[in-house]
Length: 127
Length: 252
Image 1 (tube, rainbow over the protein chains, first blue to last red):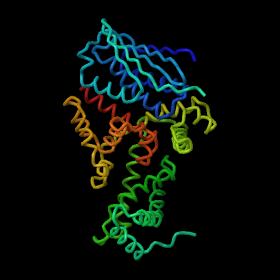
Image 2: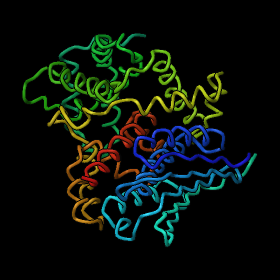
Image 3: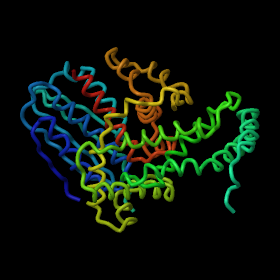
């Protein structure tokens, strides 16, 4: 399956679009429905993290790629975040939910303040 | 053969035996099962009153039975009440809570509500058959519908409102927290910032139970659903509601 790319404004009201797209994409993998539900929760929190700085402007990019029946999703926020944003209680808890919901999660903060979250499911061997 | 008519005398004998047996005694679960089956008619009777409100009667009976079991475990025959009088509020409370948890937040077309109910039932049945959560494709194959229809139902699932989850719980009803006895201890041990801990501790018992099971005991949503006797989709809704509220509180 080819990679899928989604670009939405960095505004909270677009989290539903990201969530439903994620559901639709994960439905095409070999992951179970409880993992799909976990990914929904994780994406809500991931989106909240990358747009956590205010005012949030610009876009959020979501890249979906596939491997072994599983999935990797990269969520890239707009510029302008800082370490202090990531250290906030809201971000720390959101990150705890993300890491508790997916198999692997990585957070990178670029020098321009763009946060990149890379989330991976367990790899499911293709039948 | 139908169950014999439940009589006052039978109740008294069974409840007296149930109360006298130690918790680990294998006979206790046998007596408990007898008590459950002899009072299922009461559950069915109550559940029928709530039928035709968009939820399958079987689900209402299942939920009402949870109330019945709670009532059996808490009933004290020496207080002189009839069991049916004692059990009815607990059974009704459990069914009402089920409805509160499943009230639609936005107008969702009836087709989608019914599709959601079918998908939820399919998830439960397939989980038992496969001993794991089914994939969306497996659900679609099972229901003989398109994969995107299942996705649509899953998306609509998030339109359920859980606004009343934190209200109107029966204050006397034993919660999972009571049964496990360690929910608050689990949260007390969490090394999060001070602003988070009180929010977690203040969560309604059921939300707290589910959050702890998912994120602190690392149980899957399917396992939590089995533990609580509710559907995985219901667990998913409650978790989403809890996390949304926590996020909003933390961002205030």
